[in-house]
Structure formats: structure tokens, C-alpha cells
Image 1 (cartoon, rainbow, N blue to C red):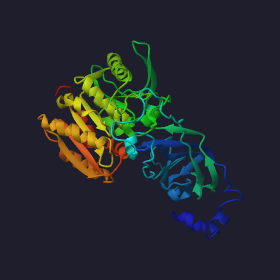
Image 2 (spheres, rainbow, N blue to C red):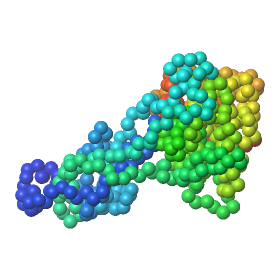
Image 3 (tube, rainbow, N blue to C red):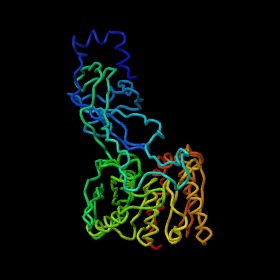
Image 4 (cartoon, rainbow, N blue to C red):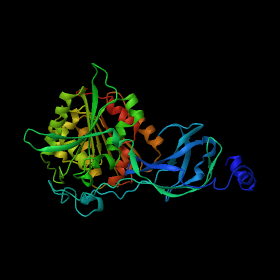
Length: 423
């Protein structure tokens, strides 16, 4: 705590230097919630306050603010919205510790709870699932301590305030569109276009397909449910790997546990082809990935269109191993959890068959709760020249926990971006 705040405890500084009413509340003009998308969905990550005068950066600490149910890790003054720490400014950025990941996401595949054997039952093809409305992320915050303006005035505590609006720092990078296929059927989708496109240069495209629990008419549902789409638009990733990101929003179940798929599979391929004719997309480096239902769709695409993708990242999914021989000619990285009674046996069989067909598969196993640095270290060690099939298995874990972690494994993402179609 800064010394001038300690001095106030004696009452001397307040009595000598400040007039009555100097500590009055009501100096916060605006409260903005700032969301981040974590492995288990979109949540509050920061709160931005705008005051009616410049504050001294030295007067603001994390202890000055409280957010119900959350831990404030940092608070600092900035001269502009979403800015860096400054000596003075009207904005205060309040950062929060992330909440523990929750495994209570919606994805009603029966094998998750051992209700039925693999391939029996499950969501019905073409059904609309159980869509939930997207709930806006909001914030409540109070100022507990005194803060000081650049002119020397003290601002006292502020009672609990509610955010008036929300900024979705990653989700807002996407634009929303509707694709009309040749048969007149429509498909909603989200598209990220790299910020700086150089003339004459082509860029990779990542296609992400969501799980059954995210089936919804809400076009942004796939962006808010987890990291599958947004991980590729993080500023750090785009700086080194500028790419297009495509995230279709399916409003019906597009594959089922009998390994059947609907017309949305071909429609999605047609969408990618359409975008490739409109934008400078490198058709040698189109990558597909998906979780659960989306992973099943990825495998089905790899089987039906074996020469379409540069690489596939298969997360927590399954498919009929009797038809997956075409994967042997492709660049594949699969991830499953030992605690997933649907994905693990299927992926075990598929990878064993690839081995038997002479396609070497590199395998790795790691604890589900291992720190990100350990996962990165293991996967980096797995990668070998000339090998194009990898299988990472989490010890324990569950169907849902797999994709809570899989999309932040940097060496895997970098390996994918190093692959090209037919190479």
C-alpha cells in the first residue's frame, strides 16, 4: 500500500489537506465488462472503469477494487481505453484471476455417462439439440479504497456498480455471414480475416467445427463455447501465423453415433471453396479441426475428401474405423482422454490400424491436469521429421475436458501450420 494511504489512517492528512466532501463517491462515469474465452466458455476477465478526471497511477492498487466471487489480481491506470499502465489517466483496468475450468458443459453423447455402448443412441441426425440463449457477460464492481487524482484530490469508495456494456476482445474480431449453397440451403458462419493482407500473398485457413452441445441458431455460439475458433485469432498467434479462421454455426445435429452425416458436411466444404475463390487463401494449407461432433465431422471429411486439407486436428471424437483408411495419406494429430469411453477406444483403433498399414504413429501420454508448459514440452518432443500421424492421450480426464485444453497446445498448433496438402 502506498505511503499516503497509510497516512490517512491517522486522520491527519485528511484534516489538514482536504475539505469536507472531498471523498464523495460518484466519480466513475462508465463501467465496462471485458470478456475472454476460456476452455469452458466465455467469462468475465477484466473490468474497465472510466473516471471523471485523471488518476495517479501510483494511487491505484488491486486492493482498491472488489468484484463479487472473483479475485482481483491487478489494477492500474491507463491513459486510453484498454491501454497500458501509465503515470496518470482516466481509465482503470481491473484484471481478474481466471476461474477454475468447469466440466459441466452441454454435449449429450450417451457414452459420456456410460448410458449406452459406442455407436448406439446419441443425438438424432437433423435434430435441433437443446440450444441455450447466449447470456451476455456482465460485471459488478465496487471501489473499496481511496484513489488520488492528478490534481491531488482524493476519491473515496464507490458502492457496487454494474457494467453498462461488454467488450468481447476475441469474439468481436469475427464477422457474421450466411452462405447459400447451390441447393438453396443456408449455413451461418463466422469469419476472421487477417488484419493486414499483403498483395500477392496467400494465407492458411482454419476451419473449426463445434460440438453437439453448441448446436444453436445463435451464430456466435461457436465462438463463445470454448477455444476452438478464437485460439487462432489471438494477437500473439496472428503476429507469427496470420490466417483466416472459419467457424460455421450449425443449427442441427450434423453427424450421429451411427457414423452418418447430413448435408451440412458437403455444404461446409462448398463454403470453404467459395471463400477460397473470394479471398487470398492458400488451398494447400486449409486445416480442419473440431471437437466431439465437430471432430466426427472432421474425420468424415478426411474420409470423403482425402485430398482437401493440409492437416487435421481431431479433438475428442470418433468414427467408424472400418472406413478410415484414407487417413493414412494425411497429416493427422488426434487428442483424446482416457476417461472418454467414446473417443478413446475409437481413436485407439484408428491409430492402431494406421500403424498396421505402415503409417507410423507417434504417441504421447500426459496427465489431464499437467501444466501447460509440460504439455508443450511433451508434444514438442513427440514431433519427428517425416512423421505425419500423432496421438496425444490425456490420463484420466473426460470427453469435455479434452477440448478445454487441446486448443492451447502451442507445438501442436505450430506443427499443423507447418503442414501442406500432399506433403
